[in-house]
Length: 306
Picture 1 (cartoon, one colour):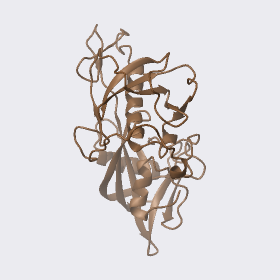
Picture 2 (spheres, rainbow, N blue to C red; picture 1 turned 180 degrees about the vertical axis):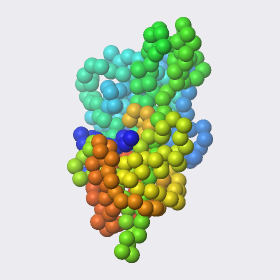
Picture 3 (cartoon, rainbow, N blue to C red; picture 1 turned 90 degrees about the vertical axis):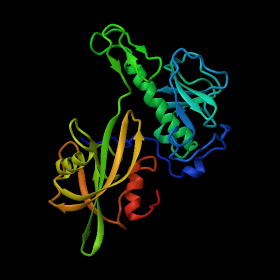
């Protein structure tokens, strides 16, 4: 089962620095990335059902997976008229953060931009916060009714959950762990990496093999299974690299490197269009820098230009 990657219709960013505007959004505090109370960029999640938005609240307003911004790529100054399903998210620095949905057209002077395409065009704290807000807003929208008896659910007061007042069933934000493996080997005295192409990728783009963890599996077992299922190759020496929340809509990507342990490539029909070994200096088009797959590949082969 192939994990999500950037689809062919995603916005392409040829030069993120050149596109970065002079934003009027204030640069908020940025603590250490491993600061446990926050997400690393100054945001601390919180739940206070019944709370009313502060006058200076930050508003994350979504239409599907697109975020409402001004032409200067700032957040809207106030909650747009017609926005619905507002959810309190927590504090970014000292400012409240709220999410909402807007089914109407963007207000004058604003436009909706897909989150993936905003990477490198807005400050990192805003891109990360937007991903979290989208995940919570989408979960809140899709769990308004109990899946057991269809009763309208209500939000819990002191945790991020929706509950059925009739049967007591609770619904929490969904998280789907996925494992990514970059396979390496030596061939004719030169190092190679295995890259795979999903049918959903843009033309010519390849990435590391990835798939979702199944019930009852460890992440390590899933790494071996996915590689065997999708490429017919065996692996060894699995080493953890890093993880990344991937809220499109609700994944957590866990990335690894591994060594080739045998087998001939046989792509899994419907999942892998092609899998190939590449020398480090002969790489194809790679995923954008918003994805951990790019960092994983560059950790082995060195930084590559877009």
